[in-house]
Image 1 (cartoon, rainbow, N blue to C red):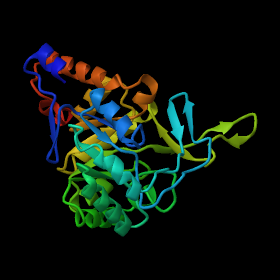
Image 2: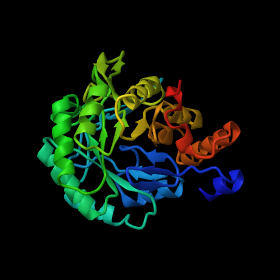
Image 3: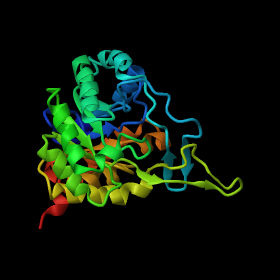
Length: 312
């Protein structure tokens, strides 16, 4: 982000997250443009500080039939079903990104702690900078939130993956729970290097003309502006409970949203729906706005405002 450095002089947008260096705190969220090296390069060139791939499992899957994604008044509703080519094929995409220049975080899922560990190990061996555990997909049986809603399973999964890789491990937590703090504590106690909060929220839409749910899977996950206040609350509560870094995710559409998440305790933020709404320019837009905000408030770095909303 040289243009920001030149414009604001001493403003430092760089972030060190679990040992990873990011030139700025914005990351591509999993599930958006993340299944090929080519598209991830485009995101890096657009100014993201790191990229997260779409979630990949042990075996290839075509996901759910259409319709899988619809736009609603307050964001997007999706039940894609974790389509992916399988880790044995996806390793070629990871290897093709070794010269990307920013961290490549591979999102993985499995149907048991052992399977998560196996997929993570293959991704790490291929060159992933870090692993993000999808413990929060709300619409695929046997994985995601079905594992991630149970603190014991969260701990077992993080422990299994930490035992199989030497790269940083991030646990992406589900908001579809009565106690996300308990899930964060379980992940941190098992050695997670960071937690990502949050994934989408279970939701649905019905076609009043056909009397049927619109999504083929009936229930999907809601993302976009509607979930931002929920995600922000989750980050705020987790920050007070655990000492590991937090990656904020959910409804971040502009620089003000990013600042709110950082003030709540996030060290970095993931951008998803905003890419679909406004294109890849969102990364530079958020970083420029963040730099202007820091300069106006008299701060010299992003780290100075992490968790500032908790100060008495």
